[in-house]
Image 1 (tube, rainbow over the protein chains, first blue to last red):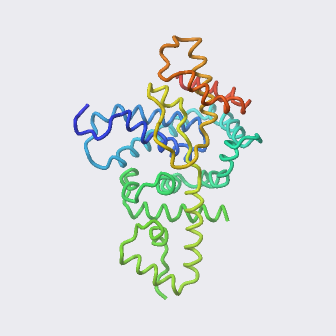
Image 2 (spheres, rainbow over the protein chains, first blue to last red; image 1 turned 180 degrees about the vertical axis):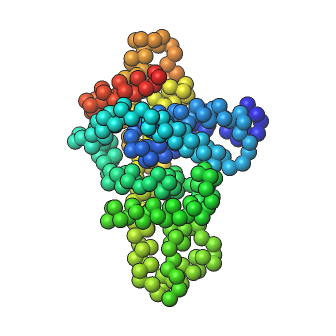
Image 3 (cartoon, rainbow over the protein chains, first blue to last red; image 1 turned 90 degrees about the horizontal axis):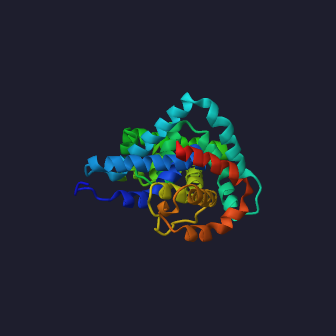
Length: 167
Length: 138
């Protein structure tokens, strides 16, 4: 591993694994897909760290995350039969009544999560990276390969749409 | 009246405006009811997103990669990990019987004890665990 790498793979996994998982969960609404994706991203990070050159680490990490997510979406589009019924079952699991504070906590944000899933991808991604992951506009621009002005616009429009749905 | 603040409103909430833009927003809001109302709406949407619980990374993800689980203290209360932890235990238990137990990277007993509570509470977990295992084996 090159000397200029600021973090080891283990450190990246431990400090960013949860963020990657939360990103994936909020974009898909599905804990199983999110877990698969988090794993895939960490594997790509391990491969990529050798070629990582110092710069915006967040931007680099989120570009990998985003690419893995989009690859996954494309793959699922090619195999549409297996994805849907299972996903519906899993959604039911999260919303089925159970006397348990863990499931109750998931339900707490259910309306917001549903509204989020209704947003066009670019807007959903922008608000998730901004409001849930806590990236700056600059970092989001780097992660999504978009100008900062575009990021600004997406966050704004995403929030407006959310508000209309939730109001 | 000058142009409404539009996209500047969200950027202003995020502290992503220049000093000049911020001044423009503040001045405009003082005399524009519509923009004040929109600002309140944007703030509400932003707060709703920020109030979403931070979910724990399922222990299976780290364990499958041969890594120890995250040891950094949580910023907010964990939520979704119960299902994943149960899956992890099921996989570990399965792994212990099917494969060599010595390959398990983290102490099996600790994980089992720690998540015992959550394992019992959710009878519906059997199906997703199967799904997760199959996918993991792909």
